[in-house]
Image (cartoon, rainbow, N blue to C red; front, side, top):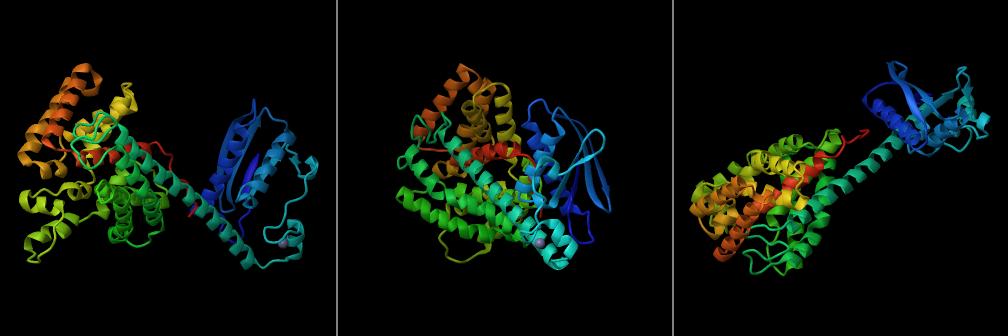
Length: 437
Ligand SMILES: [Zn+2]
């Protein structure tokens, strides 16, 4: 097989054209992989001013069948009209469409046969170039929709997996309501459904946003405000996931921005993006409170910053989620590798996060000393005992659960970081997004 492209205009090879070329190659390989006993025994790409070309030797499929496969791709792939997939037999004779009883290729603009339009110069060159660009744009838009769906879906799945993993000390899980009087498992389900659409909007914004990424935060907040309204409506005025809306905005927009760039959604890439999005957020939003004489209704996070200098989730985000990268994610991965169930690996990851996170939810319901002695230190102890890996560790987790419930303390900040950990884990399994733009 010889695979080339039909690209009008003088430029036959650039980044975009290469992507179309690889899209074609991908389609060919996908079709061939469906055929029994068929394999590619040789493959080589050539790049010249005439454009990219791939040369494949295929074994196991009669040439006419191979030509039918090629025609199927040319006629059905959204970019198929730009593909030129020739099939040659062992004697280097090119199998034509007529050889397999299929009509000649249609023109890219009208429904006439391409050969007629070319010989009569029926269409202006400009018209053809515009048509080709539109085909590429439409195809890109389709692939962006795919990624919006994918990323939004993974984020929501991760939020639900975090919610349902059990036991979580002091938190709502499948066994109990933790230290919460006013919310339970079903409150969180309703809340998650209410904020779901916003997560997809965050991804879309990340893809569509063309200004400096450092300026995106106010735009994310606009979407976030709508989500908060939906959340309060669904929960009857209870704040279940305000922190998670903020985090979801960051992670989804960062993912969207990477997709547009065609970069892998690795934890490193995502956290680098989030660092940029949140650059200066602690100075801008927290330190300014110290010098501000304005009488303002402070949020919980703001009050804690003034009292203890703790920057909470804003600080964690600005530093690119060190707790997630250094504790949550390695623990989750190790747990899965060691054969723990996803539930148990998640719980283990949560305990690891709790051992070092500056959890503002904990401080709000107790004090800084309690966070250090009763939460971080006990979480460390549990990890040393083996945590979810053995009965002793599991018992200790249940003991901590009962203790935090008695004290009315829930480590909600750590739970949010677990949701981010799980999201990053699933993002890291995705292939590099192939985008034509
Ligand atoms: Zn035509």
